[in-house]
Length: 403
Ligand SMILES: Cc1ncc(COP(=O)(O)O)c(C=O)c1O
Image (cartoon, rainbow, N blue to C red; front, side):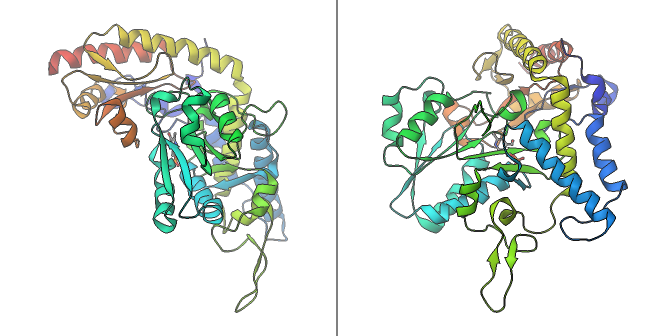
C-alpha cells in the first residue's frame, strides 16, 4: 500500500473539526509539498521574465522553464519541442479547434465526438461549428468500451477529426483507444485525445518508443496531476505544429514584426506560446511530474487498482445506491435512489466527505446515463481505505436522514 498522504499538507485540513475524506480528485488534486516548494522557489529565487533578458536572473529562469519542458517531455514520452504550454486542457482544445479546425474544416465536413466528453471537448468544437458550419457526429458512450470495426465505421467514414477522451471524468470509463484510434486512422481521421483524467492514473508515451498512444494531438492539465492551476499542455509532432497557423498573437510567438503588414511567426511550439507564460507554474508542474516518477507508476497503479476495487465493492454493498460507473475505474458516479445529489453532497460534507455533485461538466453524458445529476467519488494516489470507509459510513447516515 502506497502511503503518500503525508506529502500533501492540505489533506490535514479538518472540515468542521472532522477528518477530511477528500474524494473529489477528478476535479482537482491536492499538491505535494515539493510542488508547493517549487512554486515558492521559482518566485523567491532568481526570478525574471524568460526568453528576453540578457542578465543572470532571466537566464536562470529561462533555463528552469525550459528544463521543466524537458522533464515533462520525458514524463509524457515525448520530445520537448512537441510540448506547447497552455493554461489548461480547455485552452489546448480551443487552440486545436481554432488552428487545425479553421485550417482543415469546411461546411460540408464532419467531425466525431463521443457522448462521454467533458464540455471542454464539446463546446470549442461547437464554437467552431458556428463559425464554419460542419456536422458533429456523436459516438454513443455504450460503444466506447468494446467497439467493433463495424460499430465504428458509420461514425468514422468520411469524417475529418475524432476528438475523444481517454478516461471519462464522470464514470472513469476508458474507451478502447487502441481499437478506436486504429479505426479512425484507417479512415484517415486526425485525432485529438483528451488525457486530462488518464494522465493522472497511468503513464503516457506519446512519441518515444514504445509509444502507447497513436494520436495527433494530446491535451492535459496540471492541476489534476498534482501540479498547480493555470498551466496545461498540448502535445503534437513538430511537423504538425509547423503547419498550423498561430492561435493567439503577441510577444514571443513571432519571427519578425512589420507594420502595417508582413509579420512572420516563430516555428514549432514557440508559435503557440504568445505572451508571458505561467513561468513558476510550469516549473512546479515539472516538480509534480518528478514527484509522481519518484513514487513510481507501478506502486501508484497497484495502489489505485486496489482502492478502485474496494470503492466499487463498498458502494455495491449499499442497496440504496444507484451506480453509473463500470467497476473499479477509480471514479464512482452514483445517486442515493430518491434523493437529490446536491442534498446528499451537502450532508456528506458535514461528515467531512468531499465529493462532487451535479452534471460534472458532461451534461450529454449524464443525459445518456439517465440522470440530470449525480454524485462522484474519485480517487488519487494519496487516497486510503479509510477515506472509502468514511464515505460509506457517511452515506449510510445520509440515507437514513433522507429516505
Ligand atoms: C476529461 C476532462 N477534460 C477536460 C477537462 C478540463 O480541464 P481544465 O478545466 O483544467 O481545462 C476536465 C476537467 O475536469 C476533464 O475532466
